[in-house]
Length: 249
Length: 259
Ligand SMILES: Nc1ncnc2c1ncn2[C@@H]1O[C@H](COP(=O)(O)OP(=O)(O)OP(=O)(O)O)[C@@H](O)[C@H]1O
Ligand SMILES: [Mg+2]
Image 1 (cartoon, rainbow over the protein chains, first blue to last red):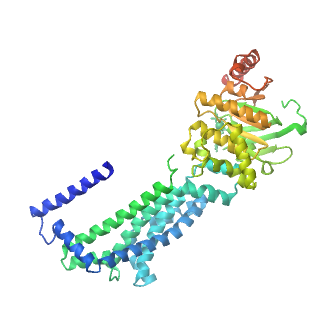
Image 2: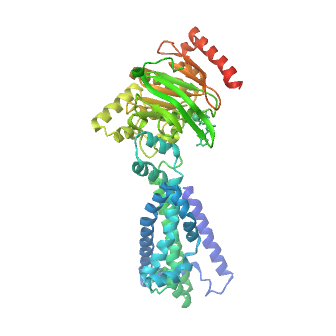
Image 3: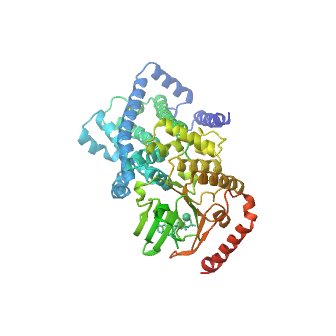
């Protein structure tokens, strides 16, 4: 009860604060519409307009880029982590690009992939893959040494140790990496939808609503993007709890 | 020093062993023979190289020189068991206790029926009363270490290494595990090398006690322990035990603590 009750109270407080600000007219109603108006306009756009389509496009792009990132980042991270010397060699490059704002890469990826779906997904996948790779490699490198020795003394060879010990030892960290990766992918996709040749997606919808002074809708889409990010994060938290039952024990 | 054990009776034979860390020698020409079926206890101060010795013998750590042979073979061709001090980090928490015990048998390629047969026999021998289908973290420390011991014995090792297996457990648990372990090791005649920090335990659980000095490590004393098996809590009060303990304490004060 408390797990749901307190956060709900916080959310209610936020909405009341918002409503209060509208009532005392802190800002121009065009800039700050009321919660009710935001709700009405957003529901209207969902029921009639292309907002569902936009939401679905953003979800799809995020999921695809996340999957690409995981397919590259997880195996590569594990392989690099298993050879610490090799990882140390690549570490600077990985760290450097991990720290580079992905948005700064848009022009480069536009040249490589042209204006279209490919670019958005490629940039998001690139950013997320580095985060996932980094976490997977660290998960493997931090594997409990005793466990590796135990497997070795029980007759496991290098490959077996990799699949029977290292992958499992790294799983909690890999899931943390995936959680960060999916959040980052969403951020990059929404920005890409705003600025690189898009006709749909939540990012595009925010920009369009803003330019048409549909501020209720603009706020609604922002919250929708927020809810999407929150749910993706929550999904991975639940996955971590369910799947990695042994973590920290 | 080895007391002239006949070659066929020797399960493990170490000759001229050398090992150094960063130029600092730990072993510089170390010899040891372990008789088949014996439990050898190794007792020595922190950092003298007890773990290093059994890790080299078990093939977990390379040595710089000398040879370590198991009845003429190197460790690669021998089934060895190893019980780690830190059971929490030695078991696989993502596998159930029973699957932890099955793991080395699967690596050995034993048929499933044989694996189950051995698992049942181990549970009976160790009088397991908890559910082996639980995950290790659902078990008490003593139960976890018991699972580790069962796992190490599942492959019917030719030599079993135990590195301070009871040091993280409370006294009551230690006593009951000790009793179970001696029954099984003596019943199955498993050649064992037990590293211990507890002098009483080293005497009670062993056929022979090796007392090591500080680095560079040498043998301070090599004590035969001809007390009858099984050894019980009463053994600790018997004259034979007390005499051995007195001798060991004297050696300890002279050669180990005094140095
Ligand atoms: N990987 C290593 N690198 C450098 N020195 C090491 C390494 N492993 C062990 N040593 C050193 O070798 C010596 C022997 O270590 P070892 O762990 O074998 O001691 P031990 O007798 O098992 O001690 P303890 O009773 O504390 O378990 C110690 O002085 C230790 O510092
Ligand atoms: Mg040690």
